[in-house]
Image (cartoon, rainbow, N blue to C red; front, side, top):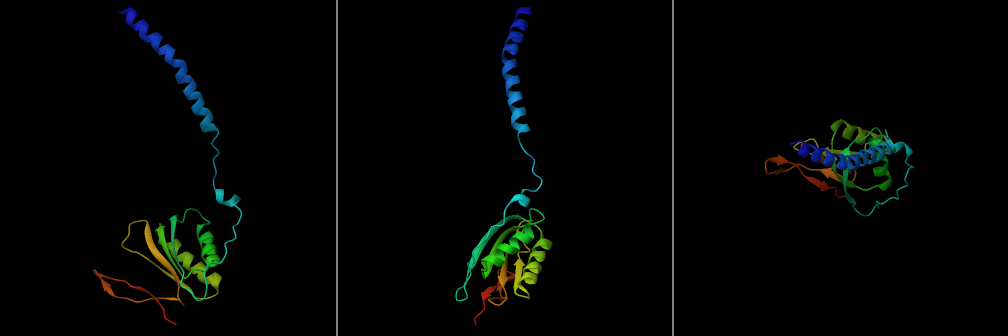
Length: 157
């Protein structure tokens, strides 16, 4: 019986240095990880070329990913929308309705009038889908479809 215990201890002691090396390597790798509170502050502003044109209808789909992610998200998204000058955006993963409304308000304030509007799908879970559009180009008309009233149409000039 003592021989069996002795062999088990010997095997455990042979494996012990490998475990020590693994733990030390893990500690070194974890300690090299730099914690960043808000990485956005260090990013330079990217200039985005205007995409929209007066004689065409531009539509973009944008997964904004957990909107808003941080305190600058509304401002950053507003700047991108204004820079691109696209007529209608289909947006995904809107996490906060109040921030979405704040985005629409800040778009109109920056544009100098009541030019932008948006709608969110009230039937979605916490990650909502919706649209942001220029009111001079897109008009909302209501019709019944499978028990709900919705229709997005392009305004004819």
